[in-house]
Image (tube, rainbow over all chains, first blue to last red; front, side, top):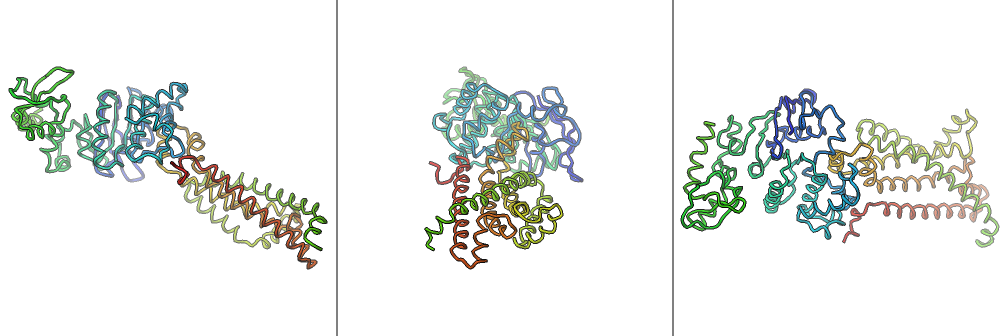
Length: 318
Length: 220
């Protein structure tokens, strides 16, 4: 879908990105993770040519994006940023309509689209359409920002810490909502973050960057279980077992045999941490895992223990 | 002679002077705005050129009115335009450039960088960014510059009577020359009244151009 090939960016003598190669598949959410100054935002901004690489190439669906018109390119890519950047002089509806208007969508279609986007973000269109950004809470503004990025239904979405300005309590909720949405929409997403927890919760794959270099690229579980080097290992710190519980889902620790006295059921994408908490709290023998209405297995304390114990070994061997 | 008698006697010449005054201010302001506003917008993203430009315009501003007129008489005399409305207009344009340029510069710089980044990232052309995002947000600040420039120009135009530019300043000059207070006051009061009316009108325009959603207390 989007592919960075030996991308390098230099500002004078300073190297911001040093030979990054990265391929993000269609429908995949890739978190660009790293400390500040690691180049993650620069890398993301290259995908819509807000930053031009010094060398290397970038392909979108096999086409070299550096060859075409940057304005046309940007209109086909969703863009949401931490500071949101809503236009303060335009209503919520006008903000969301920005890209549909730029690409010349008919008026009626735009209006319908705006309502659809607001509803999708769980904002009542009747109440929010006519509001101005100054009349929104931080969380509402960020959801409008995401709605605006999605309005023209772009296959690729660039998100630079889009939930950064929200308080921690609402941030977890909005992330969960966003993940729910992504499971339905299956957009290809480049998501910049410096928050390990956020990266693990959201990412299909994490690209961990430091000082303009790609240190490791893989699933959250891979990075935690088999770090490529000491930096990656230290980055995830001492809480690796806990992080692993976040990175793994119910599907990763299934016991196909039904457990007698299993209580409750969860979808297969539920984080293992939630299941462990549930088992410890309620003392049930297991929790059924259900996909599309059918039970596909059960998670028990033993199956979690097996997965956590063998996880590291398996990942290392793989 | 009573005030009423004075007004009856001089109503024609007062009206003509008012007209001349307004025309002088209007033309100078129009020319200055056509230069100053685009200039301010252009230099907003160019730190060093902006510094030099604003320094130069500030330097012009520090020259006293009378001195600038005095300077221009010999210079513009070379093209036979040493006195009259022409040098007055030139001087007023020069004075008005600073508030117009500086206000436009500041107003554009204060447009939130995040809004500009979002606009560019969503695929607006540079022209669309300027017309749809930057200018609407900067408009009140730019109009504030016009207001300051207008107030100043009305004052400078009063002095311009000394170099034969006409206007309400003529009443002041004549009143002083003939020690006729009534005439001096008529000119001075006329100018003050004019300044007040223009100030009120442009103040209203400034508020009207403030984008909805950014009017602070008016928000529900």
